[in-house]
Image 1 (cartoon, rainbow, N blue to C red):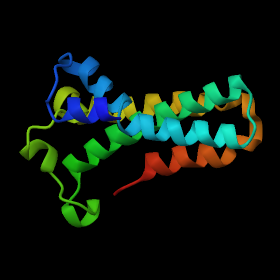
Image 2 (cartoon, one colour):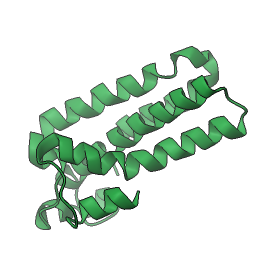
Image 3 (cartoon, rainbow, N blue to C red):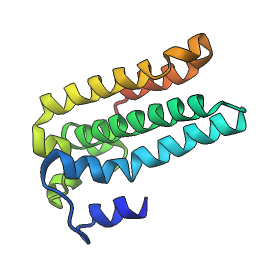
Length: 142
């Protein structure tokens, strides 16, 4: 997570474009989500395969969450968003909407969210609460 924060602050060199953004987000938001999911699997006695699947789910959910957050920063008012909207653009922060535009960013959220949900297929109905997290993230407005 420190590597992602350092990269996000521009204190080290990362590739331009989507590759650099994915580097940052994979090591920040996605790492937090993945860690939480892996810890749940460990505490629940999950197998190595289950820990890996839940970690991958968390990574995807975290990446989609961050892209959605960046989108909301560009499309919401501060009152709707619950924090200062437009701050990313004002500070020149690298975001998916700035790189790809809002439409392609929204498509990325959908695509990555679908992939996250598919990673839960082997868990059957037991993973329905996690599937609900995907839906809640997709529907979030703040």
